[in-house]
Amino acid sequence: MAYTYLDELTTKGVREAQRENDAREQWEGFSGSREFTRFDENAAAFIAARDSFYIASNSQSGWPYLQHRGGPPGFIKLLDDRRLGIADFRGNRQYITLGNSKEDDRVSLFLMDYPRRKRMKVLAHMSVHGAADAALARTLVDEDYGATVERFLVFTLVAYDWNCPQHITPRFTKVELAETMSVIEIELKRLRAENAELRARLGE
Image (spheres, rainbow, N blue to C red):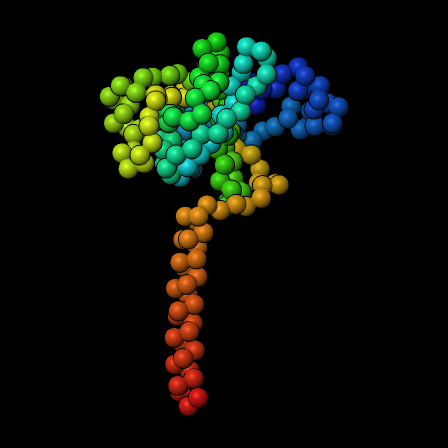
């Protein structure tokens, strides 16, 4: 069987948990497509629309660490069919994710599309590149965003997968709400004009 997201994460403990919850047979006999080891067109379009994601890294103390990364829509760039890159902006300067990567470069990414109730999960190896890297700067820097770029992060894909939409509460950004309201306002204007025309014809 091809190397996949579930293959990497299905450990002995996970298999035991699946058996305890009567789910082991479901995954042992799974025959659907799980070979997400290269980003396809569907994944590329999903990634290009994101303005944030969550990243989990492994600390030397044994505790996982979860952090949010954000930027302008499309700040996560597809460098090729196995690599993602971002400009890493200055934040609270704790550098926990950065420090964790010095000992263990494995990370897990979670990309959310709340309005459409869709999510992508990614296993990858993270590499750190200086802000002076001209090739990455040309690809990853959005001059209009105005944030301080401290470094570039590149994520080399191990495997990715999609989650089901259950229990995802739809949420909308200001931009998404503004776009929706704009459509509604246009339709209201059309209906008001139509109503006024009908009233005029009826002599009201």
